[in-house]
Length: 191
Image (tube, rainbow, N blue to C red; front, side, top):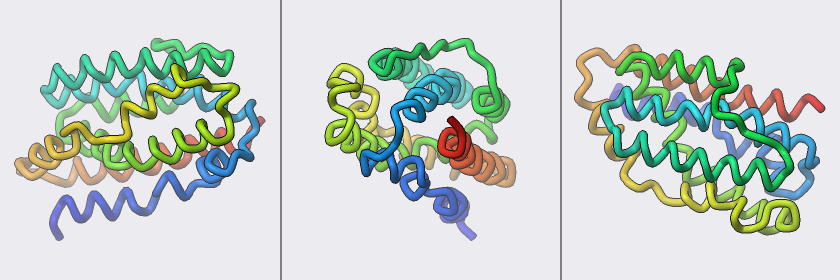
C-alpha cells in the first residue's frame, strides 16, 4: 500500500470534525468552560509544532509556527485564559517526543497538518456564528491563518515519499491522530 494512502487512512479514523467536541463547537452548544480548557491546554501542542518543523529541517515553517502560537495566545486571552508556551502535560510531551526523530516527526506533523484547513474552517465558522462576543476577530486569527495550506502538506508529502523506512512515520501519524482525538475527549467529558 502506498504510504500516503496509509497515512490518510490512519488520520481518517480520527476525523476531528466528527468529534463531539468540535460538533458542539460548530453548533454553538459547547460550554464556554470547555472552550476555555481547550484554549489553555491545547496550547501545549501548538507550542510544540515549531519543534516539529525544526526537526523536519524547515526553519522557515518553524518560525512561522512560532508566530502562529502568538495568535493562539490571543485566542486564549480573548476567552480569559493564558496559554503558556512552556507548560507540560501529556499532549505537549507526546508531541515533543514524536517530534524528536525525523521519520516520526514527519508522520506526526502530517496527522496535524492534513486536518488543519478543515478543522480551522469549522472552528472559525463556529466562533463567528456562536462565540463572536467572546472571541472577537483578533482572537480568531489563528484559525484564519490555517484555512489554507500554504505548502506544508505538499512539502511533508515530498519528504515522506523520500523515506526509505516508512514504518516509523506511519506509526507516529497513527499515534498523533489518536492523540488529537483523545485530547478532545478530555475536554468533552470533563468540566
